[in-house]
Image 1: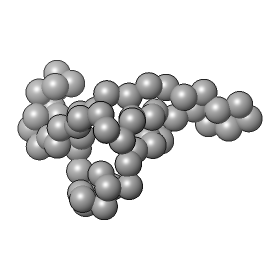
Image 2 (image 1 turned 30 degrees about the horizontal axis):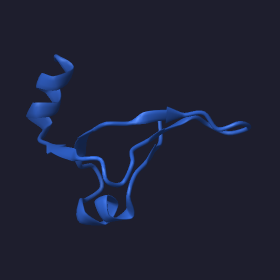
Image 3 (image 1 turned 90 degrees about the vertical axis):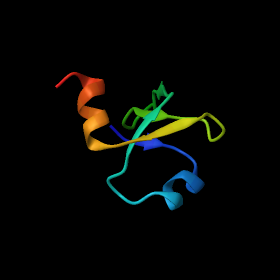
Image 4 (image 1 turned 135 degrees about the vertical axis):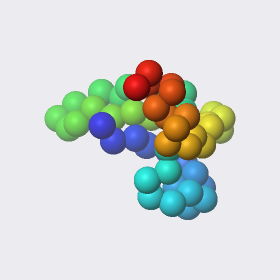
Length: 57
């Protein structure tokens, strides 16, 4: 699922970076649904191990 976030967040981190975000599902009529995170909402950068722990693998 695509995620819409601030350009500052995208520019600050490399492709493949893991984030924990607060997001809402946006339903786009005639298109694909996507996740939206407000630019001022906080986010956390995670390591691969932290991601595994978070999702319980």
